[in-house]
Each structure stands twice: as structure tokens, then as C-alpha cells.
Length: 311
Image 1: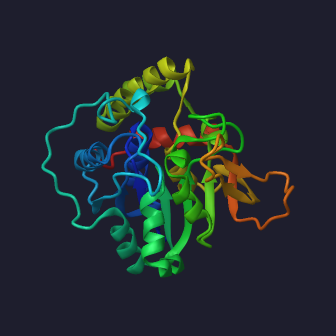
Image 2 (image 1 turned 180 degrees about the vertical axis):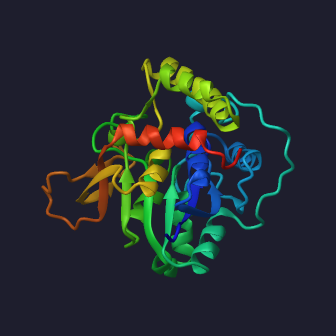
């Protein structure tokens, strides 16, 4: 079976880290490269985190440092969840900086022009992808689909209306949604169903290998920080759902609908307006995740943690 070719654009971030690990572990995925944006932390920290993850697990793909800020809005970070480093909870060895010479958008462009049928996965603000689409509009012919973690059919997580990844760069998300490329949205209404709990962390610790200890240590901080910030008993493991949905097409169920990004800079700025009931009779431009098989998801995560790859 031919592997699915993907590019990941991310802002690690605890959940981004697990998404990268899941992609690297899968025999069904060929990871072409990684572009990094600011988001969960500053670009200096998210790029360093990405390099550390890839060096620690011997993931040999180009890593390009992308945008340090959104297209229009002022930068935002999420230190209350991801900590001062953006990946608090795990101490990496000291690695020399060896990033790709291209910026994030240029890496996306180059990889797409050299390949056909590529899936672009974004697990942070979509700034790098939006710039790539503006720099070389012809790359749309090389993209099989875009899968993004962001938005929600219902409530946000940083405002009543908006989810973090979309709010940080709503204009970039607007560009991606209007690119004409098939696009799938994995929003909070799905990812809030896959919760990291104390039981999940304890299961990972008992495996006792390199990947499971990495996962457990990161998730300990991730859960504790979300308990403090949001007073919840389980931490939604957002970003890996994008990768898991590629590994198993039956994992997430979708509904085709019109989705528009609120770029008004008003109270609802960053909302993903999902026309679930087709009130507007507008063109259906997005497949929106509506449900997930939670058991299958955790089976994937633990199969990855137990596997011998990238040990």
C-alpha cells in the first residue's frame, strides 16, 4: 500500500509533539517535512521544540522555521497550558541548531512542487500555509487535501466564539478555506472527546520505554496545567486527531457544510461559522469532523507508544 505523503505545519506544544510522534511511527504515512509557526509559544521556542523532538526520536525530515507572527493580528501564545518552554515536562539533550535554510512557507512550496497528492496537516495557526498559497497559487494542484486542527462547531476555548489556532491567525485560516483545496476541519467538538486523564498517563508510564515515558511526562504537565487553567479533569489531546484520522479513515465522521471564518475583529473574531443545518444554502467548502471513535483513537496512541519504531 502506498504511503500517504504529508507535510506537517505545527507549533509544539504538547499535543503537537504527540502528533509528530504518531506520524513518525505510522507505516501508513510518509512525512516529507515540517514547517513551524509561532502559537503555543514564540517561534524561537516552537522551532527549538520541533528540532528537539525530531532529534530525540531520529525523525529525519527537513524542519523549517516559519512565521514569528500572524499575518495581521498581534502574536498570541499559550504559556498557561504549554509552559515557559512551550513543552514543559521533558528535558531533552542539548542539540545543535540545524534547521532547513528555507523559511516555513518556502519549504511547503518546494515540497509540494516536487510531489503530487500531498496532504497538508496544520496543528497550529495556518500562517505558513496561507503565505505558501499566496506565494505560489499553483501549489493547490499538488495538494490532495488540507486537514487542520482548529475551530469548533460550538464553543471556543479562548473566547466564547473562537478556538486558539484560528483566533491567532484568522486571516490565514480564511485564505486556506478559500483556496479551493479539499479541506477537513478537526475542531474542539471532536477533540474534547479524547481526554488525557490520570489513568491514561499511568498506563503510559507502565509501558516504560522511551516513547511512553516521553508521552507520560509531557501529559503530566499538560493535564496539570489544564486543570489549573480550566478546572477540568481531562485534557483534550487535540492535535494528534489529525494524524490519527489519516491512519484510519473510519476514525472521524464528517459532515459537508459551509464554513466561514469571522475576520471582523469584533467579539466573534476567529469563530468558525459552521452551517450545520444548511441555513444559508451556501457552497459546502469543508468537511467538518462531527464525531470520533474514542476507543480506536487511544488504541492508535498506545500502539505507537508500544511499537519499536523510533525507540
